[in-house]
Image 1 (cartoon, rainbow, N blue to C red):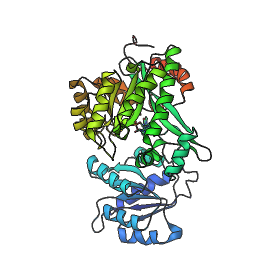
Image 2: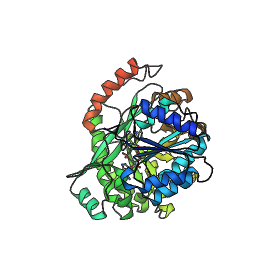
Image 3: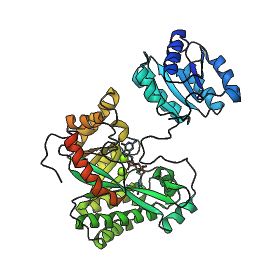
Image 4: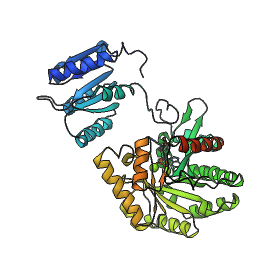
Length: 414
Ligand code: C2E
Ligand code: MG
Ligand code: MG
């Protein structure tokens, strides 16, 4: 939350004077006193052109005669508006979501949307996000910085990449079935850097194989350590299709597993398509051979452009991960719910286990229980953590299952 509420400048743009008054009153009740309101876009833009009075947040109506909300957003982009935005409209949820995506594509931080009639709790919830870069991540993620190929190469070579592990649990019993390995870069001066800031660059510059080797090795040896300590966990590693351009990959994985003395059946390879798809026949051959050796294959981010039905047709996957974009809030959004249900049904019909990603709330969890999804992963259960933290977390999780009544049957307790 922004530290100084009174100093936060807010602009409201809505052609309905009643709504302007209403929003102003709600904001005042929450302590926001520096609020200016406008009934049309042209007037509001004048304020934006005044560098001193630039707002930190704009509440924007979509449907207005004359300049509509979408056109106003275009003017914001031209003016390099750097504050945040909340959309307000009587349009249906799908329309609001589409517009939200559009605004995001322009890189304007959007806190979310409010459907008319606006409820004070809804407004308050969105304002809580003000100035919080990303409230869902395990640490507050720092500012985005560009890392070039050389820096990434050096990081791989000097051992600055470390693995964190996020639990996957059985929805029916709460049993901890496994973990997903998620790479982080412990940067000597910039702190922890998350993969979305360097995986793409690594793929572009042919560094992804080297990166994957490092992560596979850490994950396999960690799997071995957990096995020795008596934990029955499957360990998943993310593999980009780019890794599958040379037949050496198959041999490297088999060799590493042997060195770590870990059975292939304990390893899950989570596959995503990448932009630079090479020869598909080669990747098919590699995946089929790994499957023959009993490694488990998982199709990651299912339902996004990166993971398609064609892959399902061609590759013998054991597991389907429903992308987090279709899981979180699916219980209250018809469109998401339809996609979630369809993905789950597809997994069932093809004999795969379904994993719901991005389970963030109790409502999300209840939906999985109701619909019989096999596995769950997400911040509601646990964020990714260092390997050493896992045992402690498991104790807490088992306590939570009891106190919060998260499952009905307890036979699967680990
Ligand atoms: P992914 O494989 O789909 O991994 C799940 C991502 O969602 C992780 O982000 C995880 O921290 C995040 N997440 C988990 N629970 C929640 C939740 O409840 N809400 C939200 N909003 N997010 C949640 P992370 O660690 O930043 O990884 C991002 C992506 O980077 C991964 O997506 C994966 O595609 C890629 N990646 C991570 N590690 C590796 C790796 O070693 N190799 C390759 N090739 N890609 C990797
Ligand atoms: Mg994954
Ligand atoms: Mg995923």
